[in-house]
Image 1 (cartoon, protein in one colour):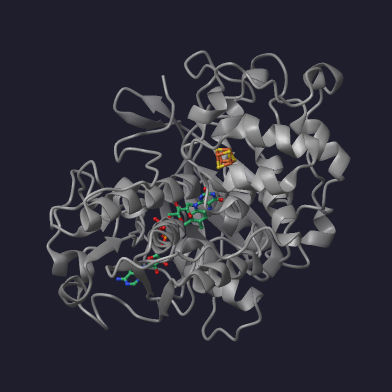
Image 2 (cartoon, protein in one colour):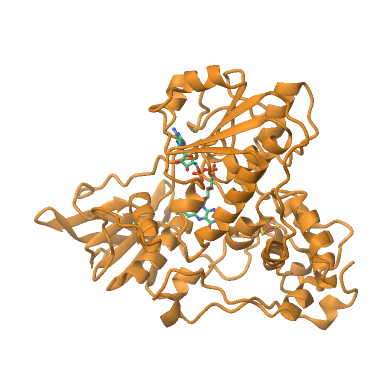
Length: 484
Ligand SMILES: Cc1cc2nc3c(=O)[nH]c(=O)nc-3n(C[C@H](O)[C@H](O)[C@H](O)COP(=O)(O)OP(=O)(O)OC[C@H]3O[C@@H](n4cnc5c(N)ncnc54)[C@H](O)[C@@H]3O)c2cc1C
Ligand code: SF4
């Protein structure tokens, strides 16, 4: 157990400070400063090593949190990373980007602020990399079986790493020019610098995973060809079909999907020349949708020099405390202030967009109205209609599953009722030997779930190829976050 009196001696939750807003919006670097190590270890020492650690079930990966909290408190970073890597291939991604459902399930969180689990996680992996504890783990012998993984987001990467280490010969096909999925061109540099991703890809390459970037499966090679060439195929193609906003004026110039705005912005931030890039510079920007994607649009717009940034959310503003219907240890809907929100702009809740207005074919504003929940959805509040100026409108309203034309249609895999790729309990689709992992099967989700899916699908593939498996399977395809 970590410090037996830790939670009595240190009652406050201490996190690293964020760089000052005026400084950080002038660059694209990560927003957090390094935390003093003693302070971090005192936080790890607050872990009570509960008899039933609910944080385990809060974390989809089943991370062994009390074990590595104890080791971090003692400063045994080599052992700590062993325990962390036992359940999580990429703690440097989750330690930066996870919304930490483990912390809302922390037992200490019942009557004190929760242990800063996510911060202990990222510190453990960063110290391990710095100390040379993270080395390639190439398999001792090869199975002679081959696997193609389509898509290199967290699900594809996790599946590929597990299968390579199990001895299979794995090639990851990615249509973008570099691997990483949304971690590469969706999530901005200020949330996770791409060097973090490159470092892990280098480890995977050294282990034997092969990356075939710039290959769109479905166009450059067909799904059928891939299935014929490999012993198994894993579809980890994400949920890339964006939800649209069918209102008058949607076709105007300057109204675009967030995922048409963020990838060029990320490339430009990394110093690449991007042709025809639309930026927020000098514009009044409206972001429609209040999730992670919306927050990334806000932070990016500020860094590009927007005149104003307003984000709209149709749901009412959540409170700062748990409501009765979302008790501990569930992950509650709370008013959260991400680093991007701290950097400026306005967040409007319970508003709906009626129309997008334009001049000479370009967007000039949007007509909105306040709404409240009624018997049949949202009702407009009389007298609240108004126009907000806008020269750039970014749609960040979520995603509707994987793209169907191309590899999905070519392989003729069945879809479920939510138009995701259907799979059985072993993550196999309706086509024998074709598996599915991550957002493509689960629907739009989170990095931690994608890694858990990749690990679990790898166990299914391994069993399919060899008749048995010793690979872990942290989740079932139908597992969902803890809710009441
Ligand atoms: C802007 C944004 C910000 C986000 N921020 C967070 C966050 O802060 N924290 C969090 O937990 N989650 C976040 N998410 C969600 C998270 O990124 C996803 O849930 C996760 O990346 C899903 O992983 P995946 O591997 O299933 O798919 P993806 O990461 O989407 O990767 C799929 C990959 O497949 C490739 N691909 C698709 N079709 C083909 C094909 N035919 N041939 C070859 N390659 C193909 C794509 O190019 C892509 O690289 C965010 C999502 C977005 C859009
Ligand atoms: S992966 Fe997410 S839920 Fe799991 S321990 Fe890390 S921060 Fe918590």
